[in-house]
View 1 (cartoon, rainbow, N blue to C red):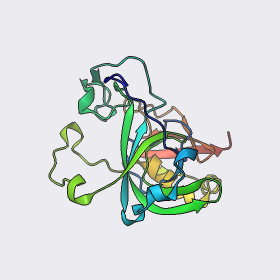
View 2: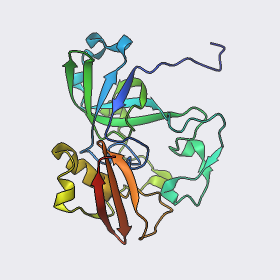
View 3: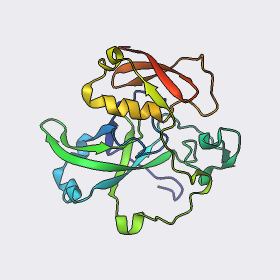
Length: 230
């Protein structure tokens, strides 16, 4: 260590329904029906390291934007929240394109289960991570210091709400595992398209729970046109 660089190791990886970045909610907690698992790497599969964690309802996950890592960086970025039309300072945003590609997510802890081969596994809700994302650290969420109800939200002050009604034919929805259906509808209702794309004829697709979901959007209605196995 030379004072300017540090060696970090992944302590865990997440198992989530998302094969790629496309479709992932833009912030953690937006779709609470989304379930994921935090599986520890072999050196950290020690139940003692989690002693007391079940006393907390929420956790902070510190992780790596491994799909967005690059050698260079820019002092300004175009936040999707602003339609990609306005540049702001990278440190005034949560853009993945940062000098150090580190992400921070608040998730709800459902339970801890001991797996006979993988050790203790954290079951969480509301994660905004792609499947396999490396996790660097886990810390408890402390309501008395981490919650600031009167904080200013800058350009992202407005709470995102589900903007689209979602239409899925019952025959298509039946192809989705029952315990993933509400999560899929929640993801789609928040409009997974890039903010700058609004072509009602275009069909978009993303991987979810081992399936390929294809949809189009017209006005405030999102219609799923196919759900298939890749």
